[in-house]
Image: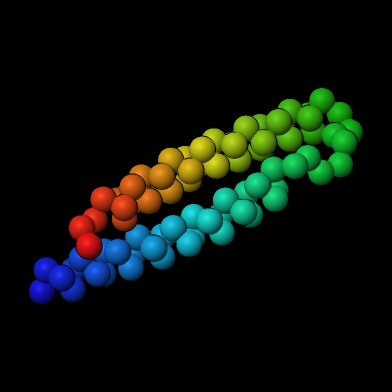
Length: 76
């Protein structure tokens, strides 16, 4: 039974890694600025959005590194 649990954990990790890769691709695609902001309010909102997306990217990259390390540490 332990083998089955380990397999499910590995499968879950691989599924999460695939999800993270998709989320990173989407966030990086949205990260580029769209049109030039029209006023200071727009510029501030755009900057806040970019900073938030950058923080999400950093968090996802950290999670990806942690999960990848778990997979490589597994025996067999």
